[in-house]
Length: 66
Ligand SMILES: [Zn+2]
Image (cartoon, rainbow, N blue to C red; front, side, top):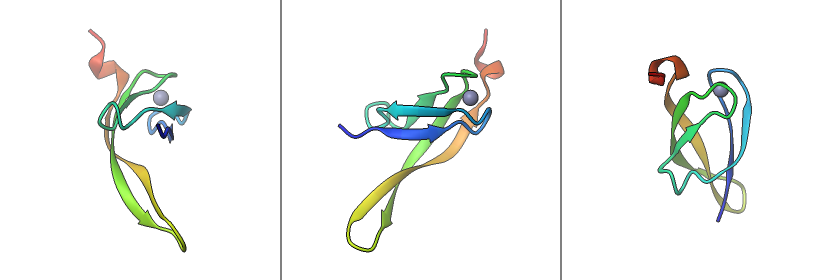
């Protein structure tokens, strides 16, 4: 299973080894607790097909807190 490293758009913390394929691109920041929605984007490198996860939106932790 491939993992991804995502930088939190809210606090800038790197969240490493995320299983984004399993969570449909959703991740929760370890540091600030915000929720981030990512989309898998295909990119072409010189010799191989790759993909990376692009942030499409996020919800600050304050809004999710009850
Ligand atoms: Zn964060």
